[in-house]
Image (cartoon, rainbow, N blue to C red):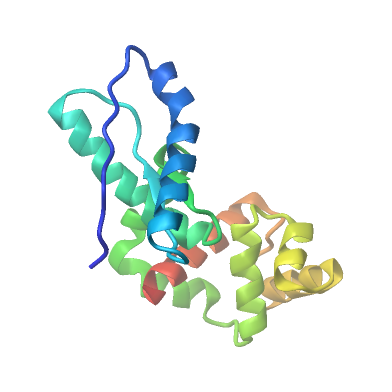
Amino acid sequence: MQKCTSILLDAQSSDDIMNLLPLIERECVAQIGLIFPGRRMQIGYGGIESGLIGIRNTYFNSLRAIKAGQELYPSQQSHHFQELELHCILTEVIGKRAPNLFADILGRINSREILETLLVYYECNTSVEETAARLFTHKNTVKYRLQRVKELCGLDVRVFGDSFKLYLAVLAYKSCRR
């Protein structure tokens, strides 16, 4: 079980807290680096709320942000719930249906390279150039592999509805791997 520490901030306004967060994050990372060299720390921001219920919501949303952030952006250290809320909701909705959803949509992909390209493509916010850089390959190779996804699954990443189905299948795949 992973250990978790929470920091509660009290300020006159939300803007005051938002202005402090980058400073606090840098200091936490620096101190953890000194105390535990080489240890990677994940930071989740749950939102700004008040009262006991707000503290509880913020705490759980920060944990949800870390979990979603590790799936979507594994190289990033900090994750904001506000930016990842839709992903969190979709992952929770997919839930038990994940294995079937993955199999129904992506089951015909029998190439690890093509599947990995699709995963990274969505992690890179559908940027072919960034996907190519992350995979250490040429952008034409990425385009070819995405074309193969279309041929194998009948879904085109350039068509919004198709891309949404593929993205849901990628989320399902990631939730099955956990």
